Amino acid sequence: MTTMESLIGLVNRIQKACTVLGDYGGDDNAFSSLWEALPSVAVVGGQSSGKSSVLESIVGRDFLPRGSGIVTRRPLVLQLHKTEDGSQEYAEFLHLPKQRFTDFSVVRKEIQDETDRVTGKTKQISPVPIHLSIYSPNVVNLTLIDLPGLTKVAVDGQPESIVRDIEAMVHSYVAKPNCLILAISPANQDIATSDAIKLCREVDPTGERTFGVLTKLDLMDKGTDALDVLEGRSYRLQHPWVGIVNRSQADINKNIDMIVARRKEREYFATSPDYGHLANKMGSEYLAKLLSKNLESVIRARIPSITSMINNSIDELESELDHLGRPIAVDAGAQLYTILELCRAFDRIFKEHLDGGRPGGDRIYGVFDNQLPAALRKLPFDRHLSLQNVKRVVSEADGYQPHLIAPEQGYRRLIDSALNYFRGPAEASADAVHFVLKELVRKSIAETQELRRFPSLQAELAGAANQALERFREGSKKTALRLVDMESSYLTVDFFRRLPQEVENGGNPASSTVDRYSEMHFRRIGSNVSSYVGMVSETLKSSIPKAVVHCQVREAKHSLLNHFYTQIGKKEGKQLSQLLDEDPALMERRQQCAKRLELYKAARDEVDSVSWAR
Image (cartoon, rainbow, N blue to C red; front, side):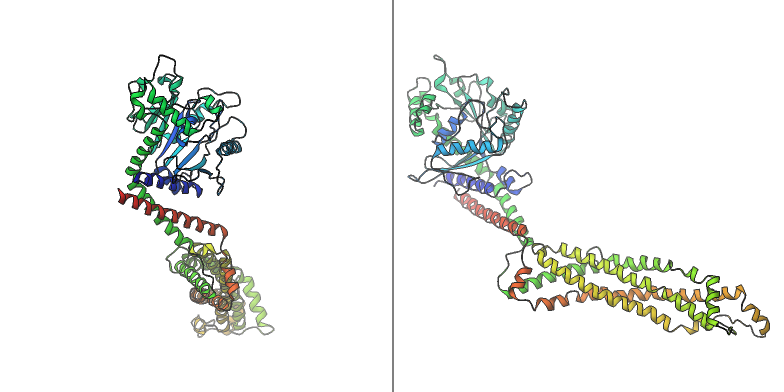
């Protein structure tokens, strides 16, 4: 195989692989970008200009639907693959994988049927392409895109927008800088009215990408010829015009073989008094070789950018495969190792949240700096130490014997019941931190890329982590409540010894008996208790966070999965496999990535080999 055939064959294989993987057409898709970077040939012409006959002449087979009006109603991406001489010709459709068609009349019917499946049995059009590959020793490696014929008016059954719709569809293909344009015009019409040439002037004003083809030369009026066009005097292009003589309708009706038709075409030009001097540059065979040669030149120029795109895509796919993870081993030991590695990856991210490497851990500090002080301020001490309640509690504590100097039992009861209010904020702090830790577990699991492919393990890990957090919360609550109980169990005596004495030295005890039951006396008791409770509140505001951090945060940081590790070590191989039961969507995604990676690497190797052969 020549270097040219290798180059074009390479492009064909990459284009086919792109479409097989279902990636052609996505604007943001890497394979779509690769497709557009690969040169191809778009066939453009007005209705009844002879487009179908030109394509069939190039292929050497009668395989396209025929009829009046718009026959081509969907783009046909036709990939020609040259095979060894003597090998059997066959065709394959992308939408019918692994089916080979050797009867080209069946190929024609399938094109028509597949068109009808999308557009219905109407005259509507669709931009969704049909992909057809033909393998034959009688073709050159080439990719041709047959587009709907340009029209000027809508006929019955077509929307008024059909003219604009077809033009927009054709324009979307031919406007791409890597697209060569095969502009078909009938010789029996004025070239100035050619729809194909008009469009080419817009997208390729310099004519660098345009190849002009004149059909129906044998149908021109007697005494006229197309030499002004073919010799570039009427409309000059940078590539020579090529004349084509298609089969006549009588030939088509008689099923004249395309190989015979090619021979008759060669004889026509060789014996023509008008075009004999151009015979070696006329005909469908010459056109196919001309396109193949120029397509090779374009591919050569694009090889550096294609190679760069392929290398970038390989890097992206390998990175994505690293995120998706490699396939899992089947033996229990390797599966256990994988699970432990995944758990450690989660644990690292969880610790980063707590230590500040990732956001979220600061919310725990917010519990101690905002929520706990606010809860302590809201405790109903004003009501509890109101004059009326102090008087009631002191009087009930005295019983039948009024206190002599200071109502110690009244003090103790007031303090004891006041300190009991601290139990609520102590428990609430543990609950608030528990909520933050649970949320950090959820976020850490979601952020552990390696875990995404294993939903069963995610659920098991989340359950085990939350159970551990529940245990830590219970321990934290017990410790925080024990701090409150400790304050109630032993009062700070020095605080009360420093209080002013009720009876001043040298005072009159008899007069103090009256004071002992005055409003001022009870207010002083309430004030003293309030001061003591305030002192305890400041102490607990510091000690409760210490208890919560020690029992919850520290434990979560150092032993969140300890119990889970113990349980995992007891599981059998089948149970481990169930935990590593991947999400089917991720499995499919990995398979797609692996296929793409394989394609890109093969493409890179082929491009490199062709580049060295230059």
